[in-house]
Image 1 (cartoon, rainbow, N blue to C red):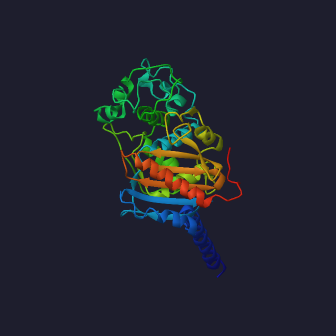
Image 2: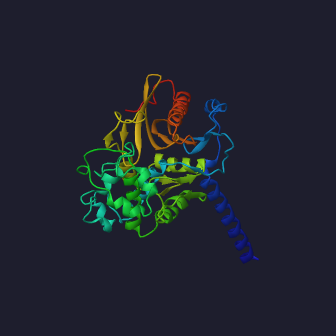
Image 3: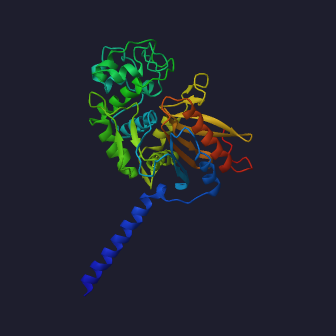
Length: 355
């Protein structure tokens, strides 16, 4: 009887271990409500514009406030638009951790078809900081590399590689989707995998993200510049991993030093962007002043008010999904939600101040 007993004991231990692992995997999906933060989110129930979708707030890895709007729910996939650029930066970081890519290498090393073209001399880091020097500017309709032209191209790769140079690489910030598209292609070239397959294996699977969709272009490439659809809780999981120094459930998804390099401020953009002070590698920073205190926020941003805010001093992650595409109020509303949450979450003794 001893062997069957040991087998049964072993089976019970395995079941218990699996159950514990499953509970751990749902760390950011395990509510621990904060009534004050919940009241903040309820303020937007009556928003007449009817295009806010979801807000998820996590503190120390546990959801403390969560609300869905206008027919969305916890299972809804939502296009986070250009916040997907920030995911592309994380994937570039993972490729760098694997030794397949270096941030300061010439982009032509992972994009060999670009040799002899305008990309010659452009580093991967120039792509990630929007300083490629290419004539690509989404704020200028006449720009040869404007996002609309990229989206309309029958062969997006050939189009991207044909965009001419405007100035020396690394000299000027100009927000555009074309360089993020090229960065996604660079991850593909370095890894030997389609961008979305690389993301599935090395980012989404380690985070337990199973439901997602990444739009591909006319050439069959996942759009490194955006159009990634996620559930709100999974959007928050990505933020929690980033806030925790690249670690999820004890596993390093992105090396801490790599993540610091991605999030570090590289370019001062306050004069050009009313919602940000600095730009890193497809991630933003802003110091929010709440009741006389400066609270530093690192964030991903997408058209329509899609935001993933990291607030290190308060150990908060705020994921906002919104469909106000092309409408300026979407960005303002998301910032208003963030500021209201910060006012409710920040302690009154000034300990949240971050310099």
